[in-house]
Image 1 (cartoon, rainbow, N blue to C red):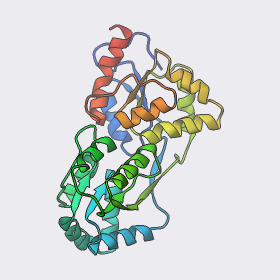
Image 2: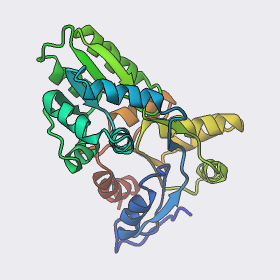
Image 3: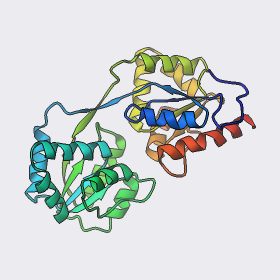
Image 4: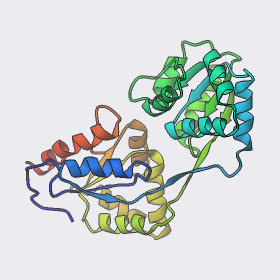
Length: 286
């Protein structure tokens, strides 16, 4: 798959670009094709609804009853799931009215987009790269002592989430977390196993990592088949470019002993793909 001397008409011509994204895989593949590359899709995880929706109902009821002083939405998919659940339970008007009375925080552009679609005012969005560090730095100027904070969680535990919760607690916040979805492995693991084999065989030019859970699941699959050391060596091969969309993903990649070759100036999927061509050209001396 890897070309020794790809054509130069398009920045990714002759390059095989692998990624682990599932939900936005078609959009990402299209961006790669537009630049002449060959997308290699191997979803590493799924975002699925929680099995028991009762905690969501209880959290929404607490919000509607005015029991939260601050509400923090960490992800677009989680924010969407909560508001859709409010619609299903005929509580959307009450939830929106409650959000209008509280201080609303959106960690990044994805929850911002969802909240705006529902007409929800947003009081604070941390600056790029929109990580928990920027979030905590911004909230440090708020008086959170004794404040009741509704916190929409990721699909599973992460070191970043642990640091965020500890930081909010240190600011005096009383946390009320809710997990509207969970991370699960792919329904079919064969594409992921094929990607591991192709990385080890040197057939991939670049691997894109869009979230920490993606790289964790990739190495979990490799470990299950005794290929983790071989995968680590392959990803550190000078011929392979490993790109992370932002600092959280980059930290997760580094935690597996893999170097990060590229991180775009802005932590967005389009900027990541746009930066690939120049990075690959610089690496190969063209």
